[in-house]
Amino acid sequence: MIVLSFKEDKREINNIADTGFFLPGNKNLCFLIHGLTGTAKEMGAIAQRLNKQGFSVAVPLLLNHNKSISCLKKTTWQELYNSVRTEFIKYSHEYENIFVAGLSFGALIGILLTHEFPGKVKALNCFSPTLFYDGWGNPKSRIFLPLIYKTPFKYWLYFKEEHPYGLKNERLRSKVENFYKDADLFDYNKVHLYGYPVIPVSCMYQNSLLAKKVISILKDIRTPIQILQAREDDVTSPKNSYCIYNRVGSKEKEIIFFENSYHIITADQERDKVAEKTVAFFEKYKV
Image (cartoon, rainbow, N blue to C red; front, side, top):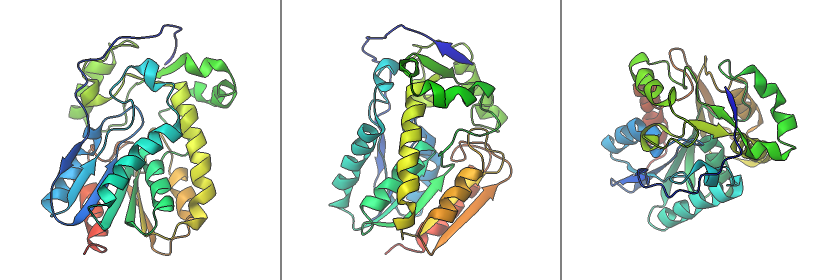
């Protein structure tokens, strides 16, 4: 569902508690990046599994993801990237062996980090990378996005999160649905658990700009890369993974598809398998 609103929300938000998290472990650090309009908790299951294997794990919160949607919709991809970059540099002073993994938009941020810091990132994991919004669950109105991107309307149009919410797991999807189905534009109740109830078209525009940047630098990346995606991803089709795989300059590269999940594979039905593949991949390059 697409929503048009000229309202601005200037309220201070006091009930968003998500600030990212850190799990101490050994001298190998896993740096995990959540998705656009999402929450650090999306990476919780992966983070815990990596930490159980001894890795230190850092999961920063993307810039302005604890503020109003009115603030978030004006945030550029460069600002989002720089907020993650600052956290990465902070940890790079303490850890020489760093592994990066990102979900959706976070996967693109991870690729850009790897390109800028090739000597620091030992291996890269991309979960459901989102270069194009071409999954089966996207509304048909998405075909008008390239036109809307060229107008000021991108700041006033929102896509309301709808079934299946990136999740095939019925129990988890039910919890998310109970929040999303009745949430309005400025409902921040439980955002720290499930993310924002809408995604501004302006944020999707920023995703598209970042995607163009990422595509242009893929050939220069030599870092080992693993791409994991649900074959029935409702947000972004397997075309996205193949695009990265075919263009990236890495000699060590692999795509793994999962058959019983949707977009948020880090939390969905096969999250344990996703965690296993992530651990096994990073284990090959740890010290």
